[in-house]
Each structure stands twice: as structure tokens, then as C-alpha cells.
Image (cartoon, rainbow, N blue to C red):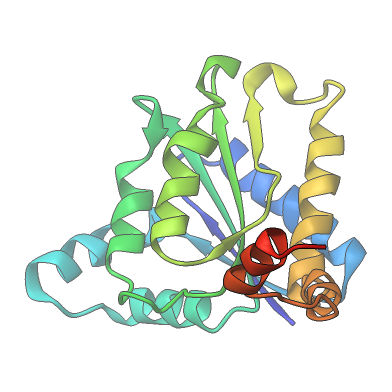
Length: 197
């Protein structure tokens, strides 16, 4: 299976890329994956040109193809102004509408303080819901003080396990159990309540 990591980190080395690598390694411990990393920093000029001329450059086209053909996606952005970075959003804006529908996605972010951790639920989760992806329940946020502290590795492992499960198709277990249920139309239920015993 193909796992793609999209990293919007700008510095070298980047804590954003480091978190993406840790998440990918944790998924790899759960299931066999071939990992490809897309560094948005290297695509910034081509992303801007795509907005002005409507055509992706060679490297941007390859990155879009990698993301749209993936079996699972890990997206990691640094937090800027309490949201994802402009470069991160711009990359997903150039991907064709509905190209990511149904794709399992693990959302993650890095920031200088834990106060920005809500970016996962207030910015990233709505964006990927709009793109009609399947976002795993556990998002991973790493503030500066999280590196080397207790808690981060547990979140990484839990989120990776959820993504691996979706990639392997284990989400169908709940659907199979639901197929055993008998659906009684509301009108029949109401008639049964109103009939004399």
C-alpha cells in the first residue's frame, strides 16, 4: 500500500517533517506501506504559477499524482495565525475537486505552544471533510514542549493505528455488523404501537 506524507514545514530541519516521519514510521509498524514524502516547501513557486496560469509544473504534477493515487495520507502543517499555513492550503486548492474523496487521512500539526492545538478540529478537520476524505478520529498536535515529553508517542501510535486500520479496510467491520440488523419502516412501528394488544 502507498502512504503519502504531505509536509508543509518551511525550515530545515523541520519539526513538521519530523512529526510526519514519526507518524509514517508508526503506520509502517502496523501494516506494510511504501512511504512517499511531498515537501511543499520545494513546490511553492510551482503552486503559485499554477494559480496564475492554470497548469501544474512537472514537480507539482508529480506531487498531485502521488497524493491522489495514495491508499492513505498523512498531512502535517505548522500553525500560522491559529490555522494551517497558506502554502498548505494552496496545495490542496490546486488539487481537483473530489480527487481525494474516500481517502483515509491522518491530520497533524506543529506549533510553538499547546494553545494552538484546536487547529486540528477547527481548521484541518473541516478542510478535509470538505474534500470528502475519511479523517481518522485521532489528530496529532505537537507543541515545542511535547518533543521528548510523555504523551506524544501515545498519540502518534493511536492515530497511526487508526490510519492503518482504514487503509487495510478494517472500517468495514462495523458496516458488516450493521448489515445484520433488520430495518422496520417507521409506519409499521407506529402501527404496532397503536394496535390493540
